[in-house]
Length: 157
Ligand SMILES: CC(C)(COP(=O)(O)OP(=O)(O)OC[C@H]1O[C@@H](n2cnc3c(N)ncnc32)[C@H](O)[C@@H]1OP(=O)(O)O)[C@@H](O)C(=O)NCCC(=O)NCCS
Image 1 (tube, rainbow, N blue to C red):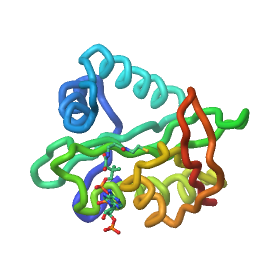
Image 2: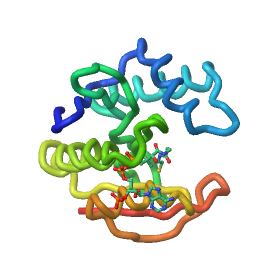
Image 3: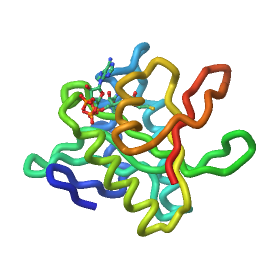
Image 4: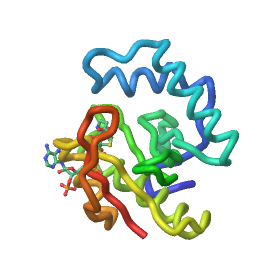
């Protein structure tokens, strides 16, 4: 997928170090390489099973991997849902990149995959992520607790 400033392509095993740089830029405590390895491989398995997952977000021109954005099937309140997620390296925040990437994924999901709806689970208090969901036209459906943490459940469709 291509947007004005970005390319979204399937993730590869070789992306692990670039993804570790992305996560290291905002996680506290620091994400370890073995956690990142698990994360990437879970995503690669998802891609192999469904044909899509969290895409690598590449800055056009520079060819630099700056984050991920895409879909993950999960069970929420006992129902399987396609969850739209996004993570960007801190130095690229607040320039509209997450919205640009997630808009392409939203359209791909609803139009090309023909899925009826999308959900985004956002940790309560993550205002930047909530704002991205709002800019995508998602609305607050519920507030839920997942693995003992409160989440806003946003959705569209
Ligand atoms: C959430 C995240 C992906 C947003 O990426 P981004 O590229 O900065 O997003 P955009 O620039 O498209 O939009 C961010 C919006 O949030 C707003 N925003 C940023 N910080 C904010 C805050 N503390 N309070 C309220 N709004 C805030 C920005 O002003 C912007 O809205 P605007 O366009 O109306 O001005 C990025 O912050 C990130 O990677 N965070 C860490 C990982 C994460 O939380 N992922 C989401 C998990 S659900």
